[in-house]
Length: 259
Image 1 (cartoon, helix red, strand yellow):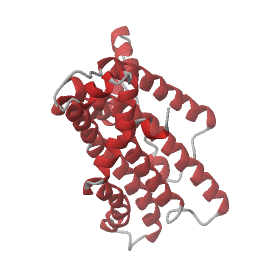
Image 2 (image 1 turned 30 degrees about the vertical axis):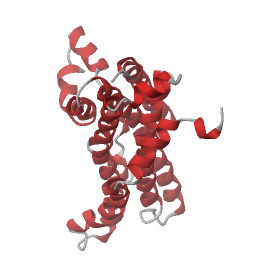
Image 3 (image 1 turned 180 degrees about the horizontal axis):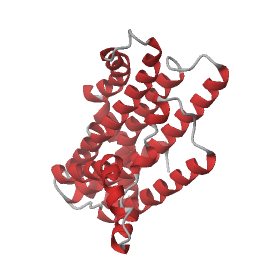
Image 4 (image 1 turned 120 degrees about the vertical axis):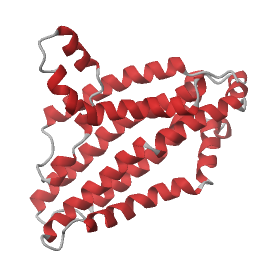
């Protein structure tokens, strides 16, 4: 297959997103937010908190992007391409539904990776500790954070695209965002109720919930607690990857091409 015919839908989606100003504002927002947000804290009284605050702000922005712009674009692309008949057109040309879903998702995931890379660069440049030993541990922690964030984001974008092809934009946007909220924020509220219960039903519900809180290493950045132990990191990556694989499989089954 010639290079011009490889992943044509991906190139169409990337071109469509690239001509819009919102994607470039998204990337610029990482740097602006990381610089401006910490200035709202009383950093003059303790200048040492400014660097951890910038690291916290950069990753807070990355999570906000995964709550807003990224799932919105995924759901919108899925719905529009199906309504306009482009999915059915490429399906008739021999492209598989899995390939089409991955092409659309990859066009959104590119921007998610850019956001994670910018957050990582902020942390390992302007926020890097001066002590070489601390700097090495800091870099390891930031790379772990970027890896876990990516593992969380990929299946959510896939879900947004797939739901966009079989439901309205609102549903396709709300479902991934709700799962992210449940796994990242609400899990801390539900843990005492479910994990600490002796009920098999409650414990099963806790196991089945998305555990995106495992990917939030912001407290370790703020308090400079160092990277996760290798066993803890790979355990978190495996748990998130397993849940992500199941969610991705469901997403591929939901993907529709008929207009």
